[in-house]
Amino acid sequence: MKNILLGSFQVLFLVFSNQLLAVEANGTGSMIAGPLIRVWSDAYSMHTPNAIIKYQGTNPADGIKKVISKEADFSGMDMPLSLEQLNKDGLVQFPVSLGGIAPIINLPNVYPGQLKLDGDVLASIFLGEINRWDDPALVALNPDIKLPSEHIVIIHRVSPPGVSTIIGDYLSKHSAQWKTQKGDGMAGKWPDGSVEVKDLTDNVAKNKEIKYSIGYLAVPQIMKNKLNYAKMKTKSGTFISPSDENISAAAVNATWDQSNGFDVRLTDQPGNDSWPLSFASYILMKKASPRPEQGKELLTYFKYSLRYGGLKAIQYDYIPLPDSVRNSISSALNSVVDENGVSLLKN
Image (cartoon, rainbow, N blue to C red):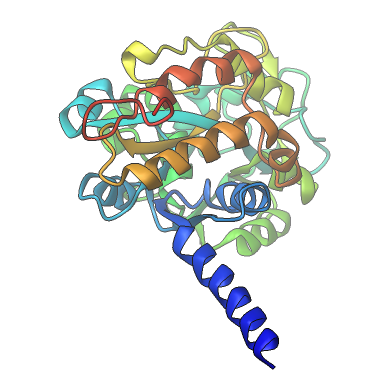
């Protein structure tokens, strides 16, 4: 009996000790980044059982505030912060994955990738300046397609901040009027007759149902739901379709530099194969970690996930960073320090 009690006590002691030794880090922010962070966390916990990485998607602005106020250990973001803001608030950021958005259309007798658009025309459509499919600007881009004389129905979503910011950033680079009216987002009034959708399911259904419509969606959802997409004109003048390879090309052709805090917006990057509506998901942390133990575990988790988590990323419809980009991130990881200024990954 004594041996049984002793054995039970040892088991309980080991369980309790493991719980005491567990390191839990908490993050919030981007809804887009959430599923990848969580699936990486599950994989990392199998590799390092006492590490717990939790993430609650809200929105990037909320995540930034909570990292600055030290309520969260890290945040996911859909667009990078400027070096000025990083320095002002003592922050460091680095990319972890790629994605893309594309225009979707419902045009009878036009197959996926047949219609061509550029940034100027897309902005004019979403502003209501171009409101018929046979507008001269659309005909000029598509001389080989007989475009119908039908009203263009815009389908737009009450979007998570990331999606609207990425499209708005791209359109603001092509349209002075867009920049004036909507800045680098998509808030404000939409043209009369536009259809607002609330979520992904509604978005897909309306774009399939409403003829002569145009909308936008993340590339994996377009492909999964077999929606009709438009080609886009690159900064180099070519017309390309959305694909993992073309989104990766945008990242490869961008200039990634730790000296400017990796402040890289992947919209409208140079190169014949760079998808114009590409983006990177970012992680934001305090440069001087307020909780060094959690900070070190987080950095180890991201270092491990970036190296070994590529297949998991693909399985969950994310695009891994190209090796050239991934290799440049180590300096950012090493720059996170403890209260004595010592790199957390080196102590």
